[in-house]
Image (cartoon, rainbow, N blue to C red; front, side, top):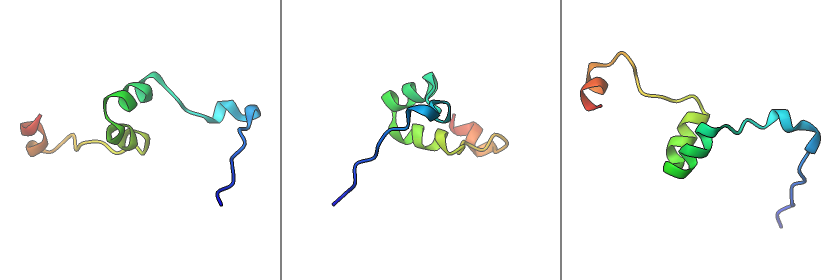
Length: 52
């Protein structure tokens, strides 16, 4: 049986919810997952630039 988590109201500053994250959640959950983990496209790759 899964234990219900209690919310810690004293540590609200540790929760990092921004407008960008809300937008990515609405647009694409995978995009939010990648953004939250700091994963992005290669900026130097010619193939990536060609695909944009």
